[in-house]
Every structure is written in C-alpha cells, then in structure tokens.
Length: 206
Ligand SMILES: C[S@@+](CC[C@H](N)C(=O)[O-])C[C@H]1O[C@@H](n2cnc3c(N)ncnc32)[C@H](O)[C@@H]1O
Image (tube, rainbow, N blue to C red; front, side, top):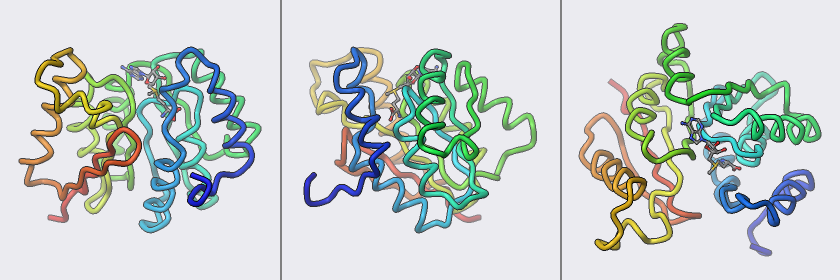
C-alpha cells in the first residue's frame, strides 16, 4: 500500500474514519478505488452510476476521476448512509458531480431507464446486496453505452465462492452472476483478484 496508493487527504480521512465504524468493512478498498479511477480516466468517462454508496468513499473517488461536467448517480437504500456520504462529498468538493438517489437500487435504475437514460452511461460500479446483482446486471447493461463497463465488487467473497460448504443466499447469488458473466456473449469479461474480487464486463459494440 505504501508503494502504490495515491490517496488525497480527504479520502484518507474518510477511510480512516470508517476503521472504527461497526460496518466499516463495507468500504471499498483504496487500491480498488484507485483502479476504478484509472479505468474512468482511460475511458474519458463522464457518466457513472454507483449502486451501494455506504459513507461515500468509492463514489467520491470516482467523482474525483471525472471531468468538471461529469456525474456519478449514487444509489443507496439507506438515507442515513446517504446523509453521511453527502457530508463527506461536501467536504471533498465533489457534491456538484454526485446525484444521490435514495431507495432500492432496482427501482432507481428502473426509473432511470423509464426516464430515457438507457445507453447513456459510461461506467457502473455495483457494491450492494448480492441478491440484487441479477437485476443490476440486466438493468446496468441497458443503461450502458456500447463499450461501457459494468463492474461488480465482492465476486470472491473472501474465498467463500470456492467453498462448496458455503451456500448462503449471497454466496449463491454471486456464483450465479459469475456463471452468467462467463457465458454471456453480450459482454467482454475479466475477473480481477483485487480487493474482494472485481468483475469487469464491457458491453460489446453491436
Ligand atoms: C458494501 S456497502 C457500499 C460501500 C461503498 N461502495 C464504499 O466504498 O463505501 C453496500 C451498500 O449497499 C446498500 N444497499 C443494500 N441493499 C441495497 C439495495 N437494495 N438498494 C440500494 N442500496 C442497497 C447499503 O445500504 C450499503 O450502504
């Protein structure tokens, strides 16, 4: 970490503030957020969706990788998480690039599709309830432009996906998504053992 991380002070402060939080382990790892930033800059991304905000670390990191007119639509079920995230985004000077959407993410994504936003997003980062991953996958593919990236965190679940003795709902849902990603001709696919496992799927050009 000492030899790879480029983390601005406000991001470091937020990360360290979560070390004692009861749910702090939910925060995306800093090296993974740095990778998301490199991907966004490589793509010259402007329009991003995040599913699963918590206290805003990955959303802030992605917002900082966007140009001034870029936007992150940040979706989370929990208004309290969103309020805490908002205060960090204010302090980090990125609030003008982040649109919070509170509610079940499947409903927020459906509303965005309904509003005519299909095919308009460059990048989607999903880090929320694993049982929702199948709908986030299909809705995400609809919202992406061709060549856009749909990414999923926690694809390895600390190695539990490879343990046949582990069959809780979240692990089974993660295995099902992994199987789908492997077979789906609509995407190019790569699973990366960074953080807790980051799946990257690119929506193929027609
Ligand atoms: C792993 S945390 C996200 C961590 C965040 N990416 C970060 O870097 O700090 C997962 C978040 O997903 C949210 N969540 C869980 N189920 C959800 C749902 N159905 N719709 C939207 N958000 C949900 C939780 O409230 C929680 O804040």
